[in-house]
Image 1 (cartoon, rainbow, N blue to C red):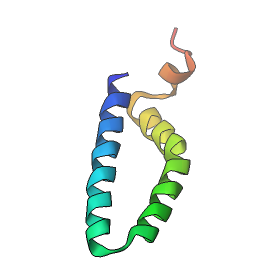
Image 2 (cartoon, rainbow, N blue to C red):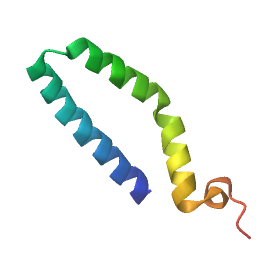
Image 3 (tube, rainbow, N blue to C red):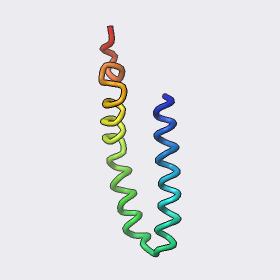
Length: 64
């Protein structure tokens, strides 16, 4: 759970920073497209990252 909170805060802070930066540069449309692509792939990225860090056994309840 703590890992999810940290990951969410990291993503949120990078999205806010990126939004401010790209608005200043005038590239709103590419930024929105990139955010939408990332948001649609977020679950897959998070699952792969967490499985690499804590292992499949915890997610799937196969620890004996």
